[in-house]
Length: 273
Image 1 (cartoon, rainbow, N blue to C red):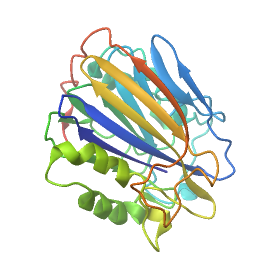
Image 2: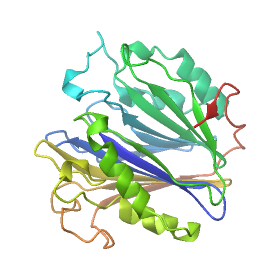
Image 3: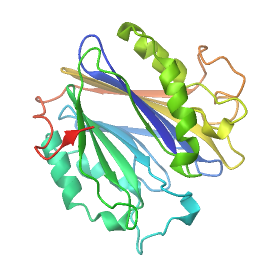
């Protein structure tokens, strides 16, 4: 239950925004772990994460996939939390190595997910759909450069297809022809709602779940930044009817890293998205 978008930056690199949707009774993730090697928010239930930056110049984001409603998906025996996927990638020195680690992952112990990995010039999507839904998909890769069209990833516990049309339509309306405006337009998009269909907005509200936080990843050739904004109660979260262009009060934590060297690019088996 998440939504992520990526826009290229005029100075090179990219900005990724990730809206995290969770059950209302799930404890909030209040801690950001930051070391000289990596930075990421910590989920208190799994001790894992859904977004990170690493000293190797890489950033990561993870979304659950739901080819059917989440409660109907078969759960693997002795299932591992999807929050463990990104921590297992943080010492990968390049996108090459991320793909190799994904290939070696005991994926059948996980529920379906999309793993997004990026450096300053490339974005890579690695997908595990689970048995019966296509399994491990081939890596999908695209180049990041100024003017490259923005990219959308989306999921919902109701079933990904239930929200896909709403979010694709909002995404298509959000960006003007001017790439210089895209970061500001991306910010507004990630605070937007779907009137009358609040379960399908970028900021999602349902009786049992809502958007609880936003993670911003900035990746440039010489610096990585992660900003984690927690809307830790209903008063802090954007609400239907609020102005998406107005700042929303949130608990914000920030970390930055200087990469030790340039990542080498995608694995040769990766294909264009």
